[in-house]
Image (cartoon, rainbow, N blue to C red; front, side):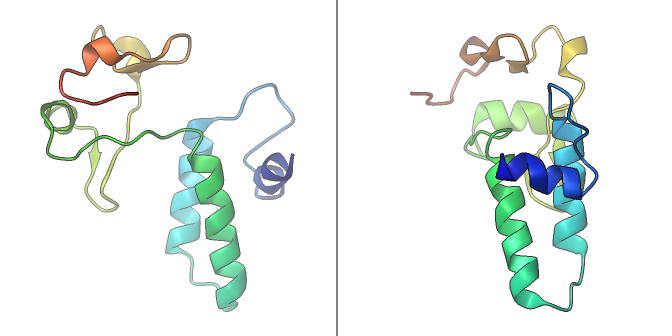
Length: 113
């Protein structure tokens, strides 16, 4: 509930049934690029958004074949070092879908437990 309040107070949640990963990503970018005068407050806000982002992320070894394939397809955010997956509903070989979650059959070299 605290996380939804945080998103709402930052204009990224409108009491709907879902939270937009795109909005969460946008807020993350805003927070890490902002130069807040209050260092402690800034660190707290970044910790909160990282907690929220953990619900939208999974780890994959950057030099794996899977990661390289995603990077070659243009999903890598060079500024932040993330492979940012978007527009996957239009891809036949997507590694993630909202309905099915992570599709490990599409990931040949990842270790998923």
